[in-house]
Length: 255
Image 1 (cartoon, rainbow, N blue to C red):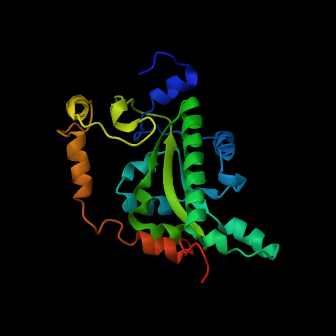
Image 2: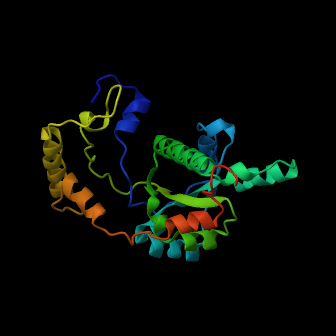
């Protein structure tokens, strides 16, 4: 870890996912501040291809809890859903009699994914700077079609991430990350042939899981990745079809 830090870097290096929250809601001013932080994130070609939805209806949140398998989200002070969104730009194109074909392409779908993801990180950084904690939840994709219906998402939109935010009611231990040499390369991609660093990381992560104060278990990074791979092809098998049914991922060129 670098010894050259500043308060922002220090905050980033101490990020923790928070899943236990105090019974205290966010103020409207706090929510506005988080949205404003998201809006000032970098965006591809300044097209601002995302939307943010606050979900406050208890019944809808209960459905989210079932879909994600994480009932603790009901304890959060606020819940956002980050949406890839070309629908707004579609309306602009139609109003200007422009051909909207490109908005349906893989290129523009990825651009909207990038925009939403970067805005998500801005929300996380802003939230932590305000003394809040949060967890980004990709598990809303467990039933993307139901999420689409619950949120009334039109064509050329797609739900990507949930964010459960609130006042932390615990302080989890800092989870160790992969060694630098496993993720950072110069000039070209090249994983290290020597597996020593990965083996040492397995031992480090195993010790972390065994010794943490809650939900301790015996697991290494190697075991974790193997388990993910072995989950089977049926996991979120409808995802591609659901993305395409929302009008995305058409061929890049017309016939």
